[in-house]
Amino acid sequence: VQLQASGGGLVQAGGSLRLSCAASGRTFSGYAVGWFRQAPGKEREFVAAINWSGDSQYYADSVKGRFTISRDNAKNIVYLQMISLKPEDTADYYCAAKGTLFSGGYYLRENDYSYWGQGTQVTVSS
Image (cartoon, rainbow, N blue to C red):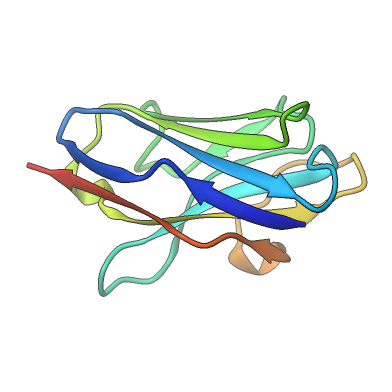
């Protein structure tokens, strides 16, 4: 499966963005998906994850209550809605997918994922 992340941009603190992760190549519905981010000079970190069906999600503490991960399997897209953005959310955001054969939950580690999209840059100004 090929992943394409989009939706990044420049936004003021307190603003909102919605990132999209579109899949092609095969149906997305059997895959768990995660969002990660990498700020300049820092390690890539986990942001949010969703299971194959969309009924289970997990968030990093730093984004809990502000970010929402969701999916539309009919459209082969996973979203990351981000509100109340802070300058510390500035990073390149990556989506990743893991085939789960329509079972199981979400995954938090980079090594769990087999497929990665290119990053989409999010810049939050203060």
